[in-house]
Amino acid sequence: MTRIDVFTLFPQAFDWFAGQVHLRRAADLGLELRFWDYRRYTMLSGGQVDDAPYGGGAGMVLRIDVVCAALEGALGGDCARLRDHRRVVELTPRGRQLDDALAGELAADDLVLLCGRYEGIDERVARLATDRVSIGPYVLSGGEIAAMALLDAVVRKIEGAVSNPESVVSESFAPDLGGAGEYPQYTRPAEYRGWGVPDVLLSGDHGRIADWRSRHTGPAAAEGDPARRPRDSA
Image 1: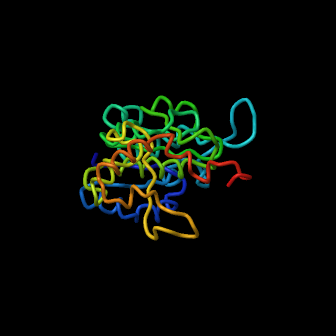
Image 2 (image 1 turned 90 degrees about the horizontal axis):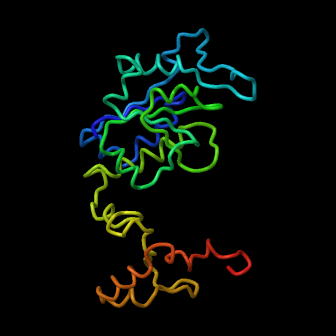
Image 3 (image 1 turned 180 degrees about the horizontal axis):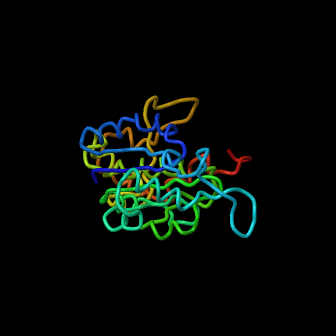
């Protein structure tokens, strides 16, 4: 991966995100990350980018001609042919659920991300996209937060973007953990308000520690999590 282009109505929403350490490290390694405003390329008066849906209904729909104009104006060529050499991802709640495996797939290609707004993008966007991706079964006001989640997961896969490579190898859902959730983590102080750290983690016995972590990887790792307990038993 050497380039990611994000199309959005709110490129300024990504200002803080692009300043994150692993994003800056990825940029130093050669990743080009650009944000494009649909409004900059609209052919409609007054900066219009959306219209009422055919058939009626609430809300507005981002126009397909505006999306194509933005893609062609920013990247050149025919918007319908972009998918021949780029992975074009529409962020939509009706897409494939983002998981670690999909993040790994996407990290292998140059990406174009299409953020919807209002009632989303005209359905004909499916003729432009190679992938339709969701970050969960719920509705957001736009695709910007979903794009940040996808970018964060994908950029972490770029070798060197995370300063400690071991962090990526042994984190939740990584192949080294069999795709399961990571084991619980503890740090100082060893005792706080009567809440202790498991003795095995203080033992210095790396074999026992590895066995404990193995047994506490996956769904079982969350059994003792107060956030998962009924409120009246917390």
